[in-house]
Length: 421
Image (cartoon, rainbow, N blue to C red; front, side, top):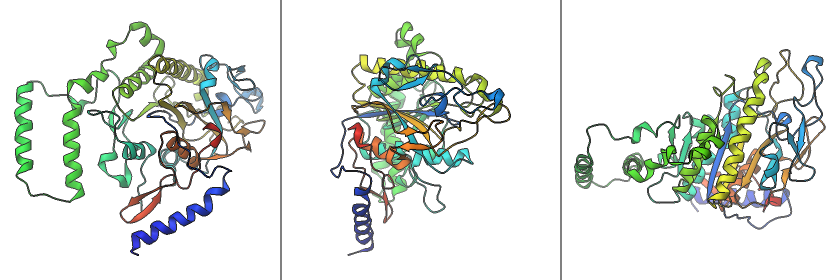
């Protein structure tokens, strides 16, 4: 037995010991979703002011509690914030997982890394994001489409880590145009482009074969970029092809990002991350310390408008059952108010959201105490949440990835939420 076989066998044996501890389901759970649209709320969404409302608080009196009133939803016993009025009647297609937890609250960057990779920052291993893992495991859903697109600013936490460039992402920072790197320069006609591609093929064919991963990954990136610069994929970014009424229903720039995500999924992109972050509306995004909380309701309303429209739109084009919508954020917010009337950071209990994707939704899963500060029932770790996403996509959440010869559990031993399958 060589070193790789030994480590793999040992990791599998360890997994066998751990798996039964989380629940009664021992068979591999496997869903039928084909795509993920991941909505990232940069800054830290306050669960108590959105999907896990509690008694009303008052910052002027330092009375802990929700900043807004709550409303009933289509699921009996499940309430949401009053500013989620469009999502409230759709909660039968949604599960707000109210019992997510981790121990990173002091630093946004470390928490962002945790909520993209499922692991602490390591000095020896650069772990892949769950978007890159899904891209690596499943590839694109159609020829001529990239497996992974980020609509927002690039960041190493979204990247492929040890999986390499082939599991990386294509990105754009606004919906006004497609990725600049895919646009053909002015003056380069289709005929001239064809001659360039033929010349490149001649050069590649005259080079000796190589097993150097850096070179093969580079060649693969060139091949993919040439495919993506064609008219079929770049048409995805022409949002003006959509009816004006539909575009208006989605709302502003964030809503247009969600509309673009639907179009990308239709063209075969496997995983799309849509950022709703710092510079939208209030200058601080969801990081509502002090006076940042004064316009938090505008962020919530914008999220509500765009995501509710996305749900209905995906249902209209018969893609909701095939597309898992995931809403994540780096941590939650405590029920107490800070000296400026805003909220600090909280990792002990917060909410992430799942919708569509063929899951058995229940409006809400997990329960917190009377102030959404501690978990009262059904805790869900970040690896558990990621395992749920992988299972929904039909990916084996018990397998190992390999950083060279080193086996790395795909979700750090997470177990899916069995009740959703």
